[in-house]
Image (tube, rainbow, N blue to C red; front, side, top):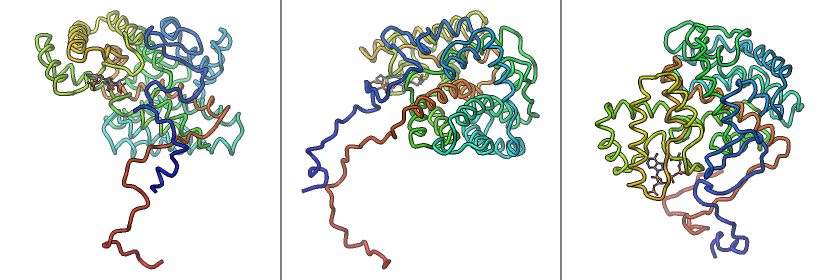
Length: 394
Ligand SMILES: CC(C)(COP(=O)(O)OP(=O)(O)OC[C@H]1O[C@@H](n2cnc3c(N)ncnc32)[C@H](O)[C@@H]1OP(=O)(O)O)[C@@H](O)C(=O)NCCC(=O)NCCS
């Protein structure tokens, strides 16, 4: 009798591939209602918060549990701005890290945030106080944009720009990348993007952050692992690839034939499709509006590509309900606000770390280690050892 069949009485439930449609935890942080094209942060319409607020509002809501009063907002903005300075010993390492990869590399950012977490003394959360873990969560979120911006400048042969505590989150971010305090409309555009992408249910990197936190690991491990997940083209790596696709299409006349060929050859169109949304992604709708307000040259062309792609996906992939996702207009907005293409995914990481930290905190507050099963499909066990295998003496 095989080991697998011996345990058949306890045969586990086998979740569908990609855990589609499976709930794996309870949360109060955020939720995505795919059919309604709606998502929220702790019950508040996330798109409304993004339209009307500042990053610090959403950050306070996720980390501290509610939207801030005006006084709380001012205090929180000051508190987080003061945490932007890099911990001792990290700045010296950044030039060497930046040299290893091209500008905007998530691999560099992953290495740097891991180093920074060590430098601020992150320990397994089981071995330190709740207050220490909360302080580290805030600090890691505050320094991620500094690391992203400084690595970018170093990798592109420029001097890093030190953060300014007198600037708001988004202004400071653009300032550290470009070296100039941004125009208000650029700040406004980037801020909409950052707020829209802070959290989004149990997306791949957020789930990763909770899995890692569930083992008792330190927050540096949580962020590093989540960043690894975010870097993939099916998740956060899409917006720059949307631009590559737009470049490859080249002209509106070419859109239909290019897109048809790609879909017929089994390619995934970057910036389309979503596991949960089966209608327009509300983040994409707001970013489309912001892109129009910025009068970006790319908007008209992007609109043709979006319309053509949605029609072709309906024709060639009937019933899959594929529409533009957050990534489609993200690049248009970020580029028009002055961010280089290489920085799109790193910018996503800067906002999403806030969601990772809120989710890690929730996991820690009521933890059970994630440890699912796998359905073994290999040769029946135990196998006969092959003749050729000669074990060495112990
Ligand atoms: C987001 C994404 C990973 C979701 O994946 P998923 O829920 O596992 O969806 P599936 O890959 O199972 O797709 C279901 C069907 O739609 C098709 N499909 C999904 N997204 C597609 C896309 N962007 N272009 C073309 N076809 C797509 C799949 O080929 C599949 O077709 P099939 O039934 O003939 O096999 C996927 O849509 C994708 O890769 N999109 C492009 C990358 C992107 O924009 N990522 C950013 C996400 S915010």
